[in-house]
Image 1 (cartoon, helix red, strand yellow):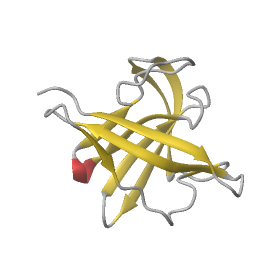
Image 2 (spheres, one colour):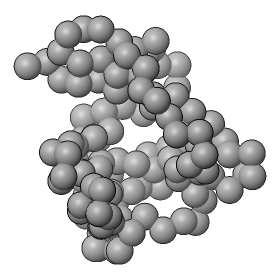
Image 3 (cartoon, one colour):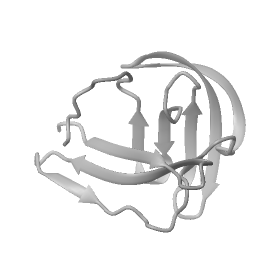
Image 4 (spheres, helix red, strand yellow):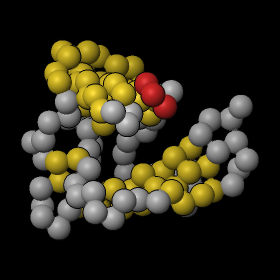
Length: 122
C-alpha cells in the first residue's frame, strides 16, 4: 500500500500567539487529492510557549529529515486516547518532529525541512 501523503498549511494566528491550521489536503492510495475540513473555531493549534502535554523526557529521533534532539510529551483525551508528541526547536516553523495517535493507529513523521521545496500535493 502506498503511503498516505498529507499537506498541512499553517498561518500565523491573528492574536500573534501561535499558528492556526489553515488548510489540510490528503492523498491516499487511490491517488486522488482531497481537501480535509479544518475546524474554523479551533484557535491556534500550536501556541507559542504552550504545553504539548505531560513531559516524558528527552529523546533523539531519527527521521528522513535527519536526527533531532526532542522533548517528548504525552497527551490524553477521550476522543483520541493517548497521543505521543516529539518537539524540537530545530524543526521549524512549528517544531513538530513526530506524533503518534494510538486510537487512530496514526503516525506523522517529519520527512523534510527547508526552503524552496515543491509540495507533493498542490
